[in-house]
Image 1 (cartoon, rainbow, N blue to C red):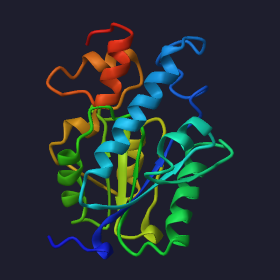
Image 2 (cartoon, rainbow, N blue to C red):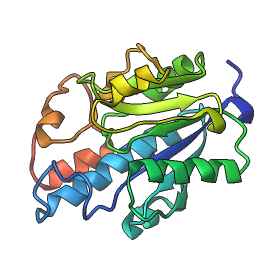
Image 3 (cartoon, rainbow, N blue to C red):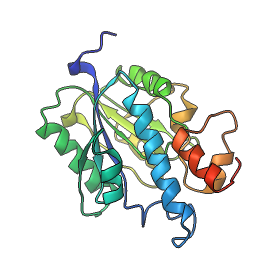
Image 4 (cartoon, rainbow, N blue to C red):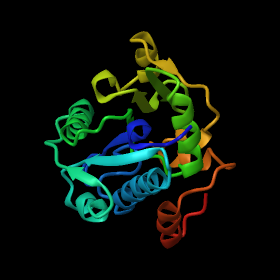
Length: 213
């Protein structure tokens, strides 16, 4: 595929405040929880940045630490933390306002195993379909959705979202990209993927805390 602006993806990455996000990971008061949430996000962004199939990245968050971390690398817009669906819609609208004419995707921010190569494979496969989604490693959730334009992008993230996305007509991608299916909701998820390599930011945090996975 010849990669031009018109066939490269505009990607929306919504992320909750670090103070409230990833609540299942560790207790709210534990200082490791926001550090890991930020590291997962930064590893996801780094992998997206290195993919030649990505034209623009729009991060949606009201968290100022998030803004400071990526504002030199991505477009960042604030939301009111009124839910994931609203955050995604804000990001998609930002793509439209910037006159993004190519395909669009939503990528959730908790993919610490993500690599540019995995995203390349994913986007190549997704490009064959008007609308598509990637199920998580458990098979019931969703880590990414895509469409051939912002106007065609639809999303229903949440419990049993894989079933919902299939029911509303998105194609379930079978591309073998375990690094993009391995989202992390609880700490044991980090130990479930022994064949995958953690991203640099997540590895640094775990090393500081002397945690081995």
